[in-house]
Amino acid sequence: MREFDRIADALSAMPAKKGFGGFFKSAPEPIQGLYLWGGVGRGKSMLMDLFHEVVGGDQSRRVHFHAFMQEVQIGLHAARQTEVDDAILPVAEALCENLRLLCLDEMQITDIADAMIVGRLFKYMLDAGVAVVTTSNRVPDDLYKDGLNRGLFLPFIDLIKSRLHVVELASPRDYRQDRLEGEKVYFHPAGAEARSAISAIWDDLSKDGAEPLTLRVRGRDVEIPEFANGVARASFYDLCGQPLGPADYLALADAVRVLILEGIPRLSSENYNQARRFVTLIDALYEAHVRLVASAADVPERLYIEGEGSFEFERTASRLREMQAADWGQA
Image (tube, rainbow, N blue to C red; front, side, top):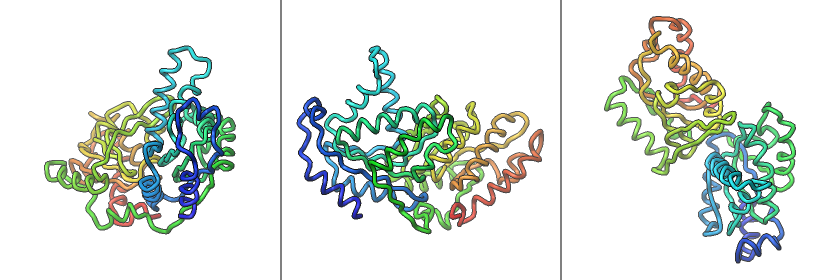
């Protein structure tokens, strides 16, 4: 809280922007921002939202990191159509216009294109006097860990550590998971009763503030229909009926804390590709300790009982059972 107070005091002492051009000619003394990191569900986003609610105004923004990067990609595409020498500059200038405070939720870098863009973009914003507050599940040194050409990304990590105060929010409890403790999370058959129960869980977790989530994975966009407060909601077809692969599911597991997956059908050799993707998805969620709320045609052990791959599915069925436990994801 002292860190938030520090930034609030500095913002209150900063004169309001009078216009974009004049601001960039004489930027005020930069405010050291805040990089708040820690385990999932520990309250990082809640604290940042409370801070933004109190301190924010018409010269502040609060946005999820993935939505922010999607906005940047759209801006870069438009800038390149003008054949400008440096497409990042007009995008940075547009983002910074009349902006004093930027609150970014859940920073994570999974794509080389984003990794190369975000460093230069942040430097522009910080040099322009924008105070940046961001949350992340990862310590800065673990951003884009093991990523392609990661050495080119390391200067951005140094920028974060020099221009933002890095603070860990440590707690033994995942408070978001507590909301589901003791709740039924696997519903079958996937009929009207299951849809009603899942909608009630979604309404409680999302608080009616959902929007689509776009994950940038290896230069492609993976669309998740609904996302709010670290919770994603999608159908089986959205995630397993599309040509997605392990990298896509790993990015999803890294981006969300709870996944609501609706309409898991019976699986067989007739929909083998979908079944194979489903196995990969569950493996990614399991390894990342993502909480799963699902509706399905049957209990896990009877989803895939015959045909190629049915034997291998026994592990997936076992994991689906384990993921229904009240304490799943607390490890």
